[in-house]
Figure 1 (cartoon, rainbow over the protein chains, first blue to last red):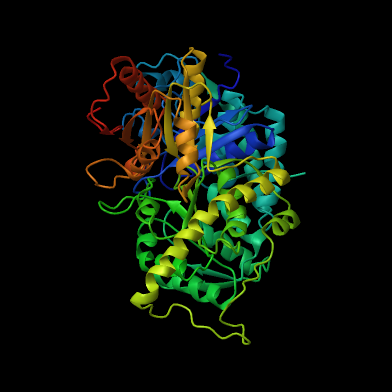
Figure 2 (figure 1 turned 90 degrees about the horizontal axis):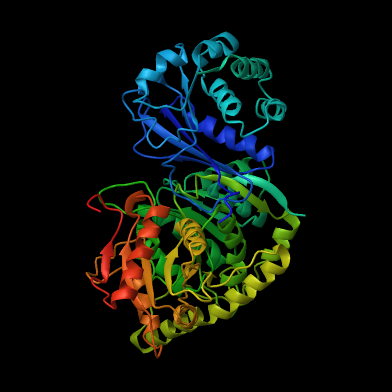
Length: 195
Length: 394
C-alpha cells in the first residue's frame, strides 16, 4: 500500500508542571498553521507536580485515523534530563529518527545514557536559554523550537513567523514577554547540537 | 465556507454550545468533562451567550436544573462524566419519562472502582436503559457534528426525548486535532428554535410535570416512551441527511467501512474505530477481506440495519469498552448477537471486552483480533465467546 500518509510521530517526556504538554500542543498549533493535519494529546494519569508525564504528536498530510498512544516514535523530546535513566525514553524510537534532550551536556556526553540508541542525539540547553531570554526556567519554548529544527515537520521560517503571530495574540496583554519568547525560539534553533 | 480550526473535543462541544446559545446550563465539573462548562463559563462572562449558567453542588442538581428549565419551556444543556453521570441516574429517568429533550455532553470515563479518570464506556453503558438517545463520536469533528444534531433529533415532536452526545474521555476530549466548524449563523439556523407544545410557563394551559402515575396508566406511558425511541430512528436519519446537505459530512446509525465483501469484521464504538479503520486498510493492502462497523447510535439500537451490514460476514468480533459483569459478554455484544439471530444464515460472533480504564487499543491489538477471526473461519470453531483483550497476561 502507498505509505504517503505515514505521520511523523513525536513523543514528549517531561515532568508535571514543566510545560511538556503545552509544548506538544504548541507544536500541533505550529504544524496546523503550516497546513498539516495534527494530533496533540497528553497521556493522563494521577498527575502531580514533578511526576513523569508523556505527550504525543502525530503530524501528517491527511487526517490520521489512529487514536492509540505512540510506541515507535520518529522523534523523542526530553524536557527534563533527570528522566534519563528513570524512564526508558528511547523505547521504540526509530534509529532513523532523533532524540532531543534538554541538557547543558554535548550529544557525545549524553549518548552513553541512552541505552545503546544509535540514531541522532541532539542536545539543547533550554534551561540556560530560557533563563537568559525569559529570566526564568520555562524550557518549553526552546524545546519546541529545537524539536521543529531537528524534525523539520514545519519549515523553519514559516514556524518563526507563525509563532510570532501566535505570541502577539496570546500575550496581547503582556507584550513584554513576546520579545523574550521570540529570542528563546531563535536562539534555540541556532544552538541545538546534533550528534 | 466552513472554518478550519484545531480544537480538542471538549473545546469543540463548548463551541457548539456557544453557537446554540441554550437558555440554561446546569454546570458541575468532573474530569474529563470539566473543560466544557469551563469554556462555556468564559462565553457567558464575555457576553457571547445569554444562557442562565447555574452552578450547582452536584450532578444530581445539574440534571435537576436541566429538568426544571426544560419543563418550563427552555432549552437546557449539561456535561458530565463517569461518577457524575452515575449521580444523575435517577434524574436521567425523570428527564426521559417527562419527555424533556435535554442535551447532555457525556465525556466517557471509567466508573469507580477502583477510581480511575481514563476512558471507557462503563458510564454511559450503565445508563443505556434510562430512555436517552445515545450518539457516540470517533473524533472531535464527530463530537461537534453530533452535538449540533442532538436538538433537531430530541426536540422533534415525534421523539421528545433527551439526547446524550458521547465522546471518549482524554482520547477525544483532550486531544487536539483538525476540525471544520460551521459559521455561527449556519449552525444556529440548522439547530433552529425550540417551540414545545406544552410547558410549565404556558399560562393558558397549566400542567403538572412528573406527578405520581398510578398502575392504571404507568404502563401506557412507558409504552409511549418506547414508541418515541422507535420513532427516533427515521428522525435521526432525516437530521443526518439535512446535516450532510449543509456540510457534506455523512452520518447514519453506523459507518460500515469496507464491508461490501468483508468476510471478517470488527464492530465497535468511539475513538478506537479510527485505529480499527487503519488496521482494515493495512490488512486490505495484504489482500485480506476485512471490514469494520463503527456504531454511532446505540440508543435507539439499529437492530435490522446492523444485521444487514453483517450478514455476509463469516465471523465478527464485537468490541465492548465496558464490562457489564453479565458473565456472558458486554452490552454491545449482547445486542449485536441478538440482532444476528433473525438472519437465516449468520456469522459466528465473539466478544472482546477491551480498553477498560484507559487501556490502550492499538493497531496490533486490532490485527490480533482479525487473526482470531481468521482462525474461527478456518476451523469452524468459535471457542470461548466472551473474551478480554489488552490485559497484562496477553
